[in-house]
Amino acid sequence: MDTLQTTSITPVRHKTCLSWRKSDSVWMLGIYGTAIGAGVLFLPINAGAGGILPLIIMSLLVFPMTYFAHRGLCRLALSGKTECHDITDVVEQHFGRKAGNIITLLYFFAIYPILLVYAVAITNTVENIIINQLNHNAPPRSVLALILLMGLMAIVRLGKEVIVKVMGMLVFPFVAVLLFLSLFLIPHWSMDIFRQPLVIDASSQGGFINTLWLAIPVLVFSFNHSPIISAFAMAKKEEYGDYAEAKCSRILLLSNILMVITALFFVFSCVLSLTPAHLAQAKMQNISILSFLSNHFHNPFIGVMAPLVALVAITKSFLGHYLGASEGFSGLLVRSLSQQGITLQKTSITRLTGIFMLITTWAVATSNPNILGIIEMLGGPIIAILLFLLPMYSINKVPAMAKYRGAVSNFFVWIIGFFALSAILYKMF
Image (tube, rainbow, N blue to C red; front, side, top):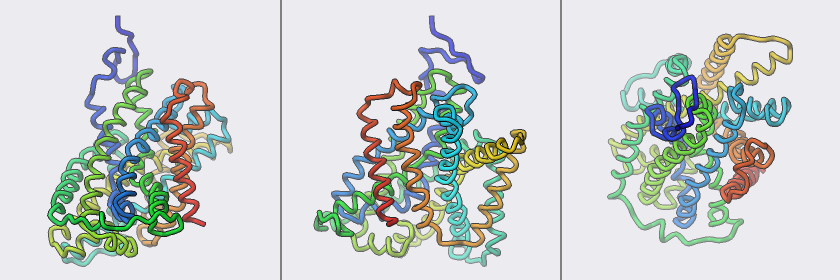
């Protein structure tokens, strides 16, 4: 007889727990939507700058480093007791209140600054569309930013499940256009990148070792979907109970395969359409690859499609990162108030979190600071710690995760995590 696992959703039987459900497809697309966003639009510039060999090696590394790292974080989120509501609760259960407070703070600062970047980016993108594509005067920046962010917050207010569904819906047009642009560039492919001489010198800015080393944080950032992992794990734990880990791993595997295939096709198509000198020029201009392609080919089709693709990508990324940022802020708020003996209802916490997010994202989007480089320096090291190092440390220390010890993939994640952290610190100092 099948073993019955009762959940608040529907009963899950042992032999049928891995049968695919509609909710699994929704989460798979939501994870994909969080990962494949604005970061991918800058990936070709960084990945192709060092020539074809670093690009090929990065292409081989990106799937295992993305899948194994996020699977480890998901396993950590699932390892807590039933009363744990998010990953910060799980860390506090395993390592104590002080560690829980530290991880909550790190988790927030790994995600929240990126949310601010997307608030600025979506305002700039819509403003650009109004001026250059629609040939109208844009409204005052403060008004435009407020309208856009309130629209996004209206989606957020509908709940986590609606956010994931919206991201899933946005995936299809985004992937379709991304693939179409990749195919559109094929006639412009050249062999220039294959003719670039290979420079091994690690001290050289364009050298093979230097390029590959410094590109790892870019890969981590571009394929990062850690903000949605905690919410994903908790939802599947409620739905599948003890069998959630197997289902989560399968959903992550399929979503990661999808994101790597589409992103790499786009990267290779862009890189083969340009020379290494063009990629270096795009990097100096600090613009996305789509903006550079539009200027380079003077093609009206790309000129129209580039901002639309960027708008969809940024919207998806904003919604996905909002889940993680709001979760982190709520955790900080609850812990700060509890230390003062104050307890608030969940609805009050949610309302205060929403107000904080709207005011701060609107203020930053209105002021339009050039903060992308600063954000990457702040968010990058924390992402490497939380996504790569913390889950692997937990596997070695937490009894509930002992069954995952000794896997070769664990050592691989350790190595990539330290490489990412060292590369970011090198760029900072």
